[in-house]
Image (spheres, rainbow, N blue to C red):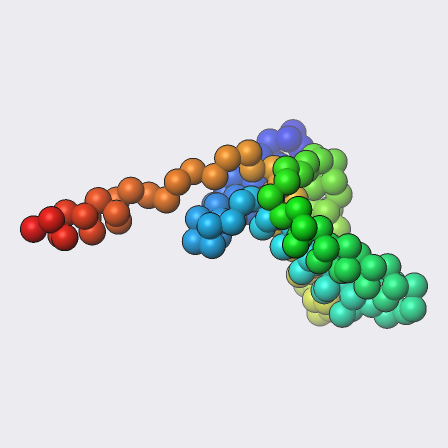
Length: 141
């Protein structure tokens, strides 16, 4: 059951915009995954409320910046259980936002899920050939 939920969320919510982002920027899905992890680390650093979390997210931001710049296109893995854990935390933050109006932290879990679903993509399809063929046909005439 959870695998069906994971498949539906990835297929309908996260993977299509990630594929379009990869096609528009000509970056690999692994580079986009590292980008979203870097953004999540920066968001965590921004929202840190004590010294310990500031240090943790600060170090995570530096590590993600270095890995995103040095090994952006190296394949990464995405774990099912981690995506489900992040989804659980996202749902908890959304429920908190709906009940008491505190929405801080929801974006962190969205960035984490985007990073994980980007890492789960194995191949990026080429851009649609429709635009290219229309442009080529108009230039030929």
